[in-house]
Length: 124
Image (cartoon, rainbow, N blue to C red):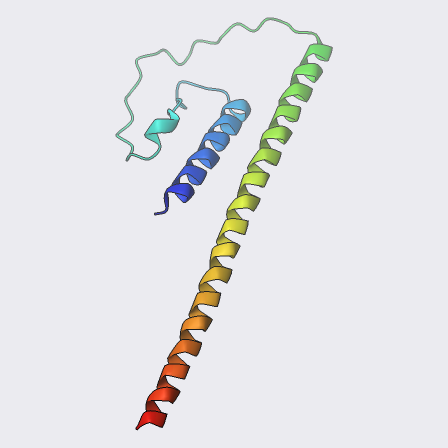
């Protein structure tokens, strides 16, 4: 695979990892997977010895604070999605450019082959 495509896919994976970390909270069943380990086959999940019946204490927060936090998270999510969209657009433009170049090259080769065939038949 082309090195630039590998780097692009890796950057998309990094962005997706950031988005997922902002959206989903960690639990005992859902553990964090470092971005460097996503390219290896997953091993069997390790059973945790933690007591799952315990409940974390939640401190009361004013509704305005929730709205501000939610707004900041949504704003961050939108910015990350826009960045990801730009990267995907660049990726598709790269693919389109390669397809156009390949089609031009193929048409040139076909024309060259046709001219070679026509000159061979005239010489005989």
